[in-house]
Picture (cartoon, rainbow, N blue to C red):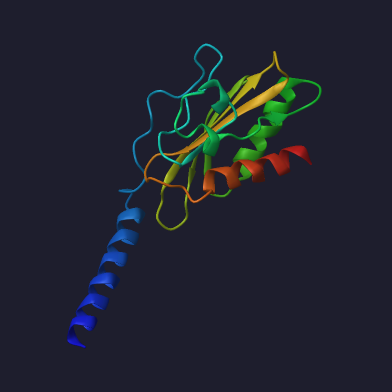
Amino acid sequence: MKLLSIAATLVIALSAGVVIGGQVGILSGKTPENLGVNAGKLHPPSLNPNSVSSQAALYPEHPQREYASISPLTYSGDGTAAMSKLALILKSQKGTKLITSQPDYLYAQSTTAVLKFTDDVEFWLDGQNSVIQVRSASRLGRKDFGVNRARIEAIRAQFSS
Protein backbone atom coordinates (compact mmCIF):
# COMPACT_ATOMS: atom_id res chain seq x y z
CA MET A 1 0.00 0.00 0.00
CA LYS A 2 2.86 2.39 0.84
CA LEU A 3 4.49 1.69 -2.56
CA LEU A 4 1.21 2.63 -4.26
CA SER A 5 1.10 5.90 -2.34
CA ILE A 6 4.68 6.72 -3.33
CA ALA A 7 3.92 5.93 -6.98
CA ALA A 8 0.80 8.14 -6.92
CA THR A 9 2.80 10.99 -5.37
CA LEU A 10 5.48 10.63 -8.06
CA VAL A 11 2.86 10.69 -10.84
CA ILE A 12 1.26 13.83 -9.40
CA ALA A 13 4.65 15.52 -9.01
CA LEU A 14 5.69 14.58 -12.55
CA SER A 15 2.38 15.83 -13.98
CA ALA A 16 2.72 19.11 -12.11
CA GLY A 17 6.29 19.45 -13.35
CA VAL A 18 5.18 18.96 -16.97
CA VAL A 19 2.41 21.57 -16.63
CA ILE A 20 4.76 24.07 -14.99
CA GLY A 21 7.42 23.35 -17.62
CA GLY A 22 4.86 24.04 -20.34
CA GLN A 23 3.80 27.29 -18.72
CA VAL A 24 7.37 28.60 -18.67
CA GLY A 25 7.94 27.68 -22.33
CA ILE A 26 10.06 24.54 -22.08
CA LEU A 27 7.63 22.62 -24.35
CA SER A 28 7.29 25.27 -27.06
CA GLY A 29 10.32 24.11 -29.06
CA LYS A 30 12.44 26.17 -31.44
CA THR A 31 11.13 27.95 -34.52
CA PRO A 32 12.26 25.92 -37.54
CA GLU A 33 14.67 27.67 -39.86
CA ASN A 34 13.47 25.94 -43.02
CA LEU A 35 9.92 27.27 -43.33
CA GLY A 36 8.56 29.08 -46.36
CA VAL A 37 8.22 28.24 -50.03
CA ASN A 38 11.14 26.84 -52.00
CA ALA A 39 10.69 26.10 -55.73
CA GLY A 40 6.91 26.00 -55.35
CA LYS A 41 6.96 23.70 -52.33
CA LEU A 42 6.39 24.07 -48.63
CA HIS A 43 8.70 22.07 -46.39
CA PRO A 44 8.00 18.30 -46.45
CA PRO A 45 5.86 16.68 -43.75
CA SER A 46 7.57 15.74 -40.48
CA LEU A 47 9.23 12.34 -40.24
CA ASN A 48 6.89 11.51 -37.34
CA PRO A 49 3.08 11.33 -37.49
CA ASN A 50 2.64 14.90 -36.25
CA SER A 51 2.02 17.04 -39.33
CA VAL A 52 -0.25 17.55 -42.31
CA SER A 53 0.63 18.86 -45.76
CA SER A 54 -1.38 19.42 -48.91
CA GLN A 55 1.84 18.77 -50.81
CA ALA A 56 2.64 15.41 -49.19
CA ALA A 57 2.17 13.67 -52.56
CA LEU A 58 5.20 15.60 -53.87
CA TYR A 59 7.31 13.40 -51.58
CA PRO A 60 6.35 9.84 -52.73
CA GLU A 61 9.03 8.08 -50.68
CA HIS A 62 8.26 10.01 -47.49
CA PRO A 63 7.42 7.65 -44.58
CA GLN A 64 4.53 9.86 -43.37
CA ARG A 65 3.11 10.77 -46.79
CA GLU A 66 -0.23 9.02 -46.22
CA TYR A 67 -0.68 10.26 -42.65
CA ALA A 68 0.21 13.83 -43.60
CA SER A 69 -1.87 14.10 -46.76
CA ILE A 70 -4.60 16.75 -46.61
CA SER A 71 -6.38 18.72 -49.32
CA PRO A 72 -5.36 22.30 -50.06
CA LEU A 73 -7.83 25.11 -49.46
CA THR A 74 -9.86 26.05 -52.51
CA TYR A 75 -11.07 29.50 -53.41
CA SER A 76 -12.77 31.25 -56.28
CA GLY A 77 -11.99 34.71 -57.54
CA ASP A 78 -9.04 36.75 -56.39
CA GLY A 79 -6.26 34.79 -54.66
CA THR A 80 -4.95 37.82 -52.81
CA ALA A 81 -8.42 38.47 -51.37
CA ALA A 82 -8.60 34.79 -50.34
CA MET A 83 -5.28 35.14 -48.50
CA SER A 84 -6.51 38.30 -46.76
CA LYS A 85 -9.61 36.42 -45.59
CA LEU A 86 -7.40 33.58 -44.38
CA ALA A 87 -5.18 36.03 -42.46
CA LEU A 88 -8.26 37.38 -40.64
CA ILE A 89 -9.30 33.84 -39.72
CA LEU A 90 -5.84 33.07 -38.35
CA LYS A 91 -5.84 36.27 -36.29
CA SER A 92 -9.17 35.22 -34.75
CA GLN A 93 -7.98 31.72 -33.73
CA LYS A 94 -7.45 31.33 -30.00
CA GLY A 95 -3.79 30.57 -29.27
CA THR A 96 -2.68 31.47 -32.80
CA LYS A 97 -0.33 34.31 -33.66
CA LEU A 98 0.19 35.42 -37.26
CA ILE A 99 3.95 35.87 -37.68
CA THR A 100 4.36 36.48 -41.43
CA SER A 101 1.69 37.96 -43.67
CA GLN A 102 2.57 38.38 -47.34
CA PRO A 103 0.19 38.48 -50.31
CA ASP A 104 1.09 34.89 -51.24
CA TYR A 105 2.34 33.40 -47.93
CA LEU A 106 1.13 33.24 -44.33
CA TYR A 107 2.99 31.78 -41.38
CA ALA A 108 1.39 31.40 -37.95
CA GLN A 109 2.26 29.76 -34.66
CA SER A 110 -0.47 27.93 -32.77
CA THR A 111 0.11 27.26 -29.07
CA THR A 112 -1.89 24.90 -26.88
CA ALA A 113 -3.50 26.41 -23.78
CA VAL A 114 -2.08 24.33 -20.92
CA LEU A 115 1.20 22.75 -22.00
CA LYS A 116 2.14 25.51 -24.49
CA PHE A 117 3.19 23.14 -27.28
CA THR A 118 3.72 25.22 -30.44
CA ASP A 119 2.84 24.14 -33.97
CA ASP A 120 3.97 25.90 -37.13
CA VAL A 121 1.21 26.59 -39.67
CA GLU A 122 1.89 27.74 -43.24
CA PHE A 123 -0.29 28.72 -46.19
CA TRP A 124 0.98 29.42 -49.71
CA LEU A 125 -1.10 30.87 -52.51
CA ASP A 126 -0.56 28.48 -55.41
CA GLY A 127 -2.11 30.73 -58.06
CA GLN A 128 -1.15 28.43 -60.91
CA ASN A 129 -3.45 25.74 -59.47
CA SER A 130 -5.97 28.15 -57.88
CA VAL A 131 -5.52 26.65 -54.41
CA ILE A 132 -3.88 27.54 -51.13
CA GLN A 133 -1.34 24.92 -50.11
CA VAL A 134 -1.17 24.17 -46.38
CA ARG A 135 1.27 22.68 -43.90
CA SER A 136 0.85 22.37 -40.15
CA ALA A 137 3.45 20.60 -38.02
CA SER A 138 4.22 20.04 -34.36
CA ARG A 139 7.66 21.14 -33.23
CA LEU A 140 7.94 18.55 -30.47
CA GLY A 141 6.56 15.10 -29.84
CA ARG A 142 6.27 11.95 -31.84
CA LYS A 143 2.51 12.17 -32.41
CA ASP A 144 0.05 15.01 -32.63
CA PHE A 145 -3.12 12.93 -31.99
CA GLY A 146 -4.76 14.59 -35.00
CA VAL A 147 -4.42 18.15 -33.68
CA ASN A 148 -2.84 19.58 -36.85
CA ARG A 149 -5.47 17.96 -39.11
CA ALA A 150 -8.30 19.18 -36.87
CA ARG A 151 -6.85 22.71 -36.90
CA ILE A 152 -6.63 22.86 -40.69
CA GLU A 153 -10.12 21.40 -41.10
CA ALA A 154 -11.52 23.98 -38.67
CA ILE A 155 -9.79 26.75 -40.62
CA ARG A 156 -11.12 25.23 -43.86
CA ALA A 157 -14.68 25.29 -42.48
CA GLN A 158 -14.37 28.97 -41.55
CA PHE A 159 -12.68 29.82 -44.85
CA SER A 160 -15.40 28.09 -46.89
CA SER A 161 -18.30 29.77 -45.13
